[in-house]
Length: 132
Image (cartoon, rainbow, N blue to C red; front, side, top):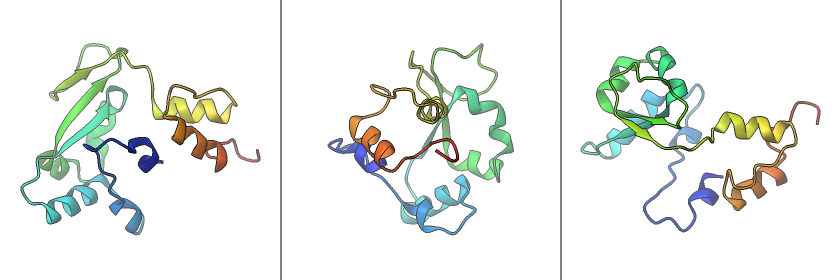
């Protein structure tokens, strides 16, 4: 789906290193693998404002925090920021959780994802409630 979503966007690349690792796959593992390939890379990790409160509970958070610059995406719903990370404010009320919930309940995701991604989700019957 990621390849479909970024098709034609020359500034983006999809990296499947997480898919090639045995589970569990943690964010720190991904960052360390990228660092191994490109030790001088400046890494930014975009996280939704709704997930910041759980960030310190991530596996090996302190090490991860030393290796990346977290950037918080405020989709226009967040209260006053209670963290030290830079914030990108966009009035975008789209979340992966909402997309999965809409698919599971049979509601439209048109305009929430690229058409190619929507086609993959429908064709592969992704995010359906169990038994449907």
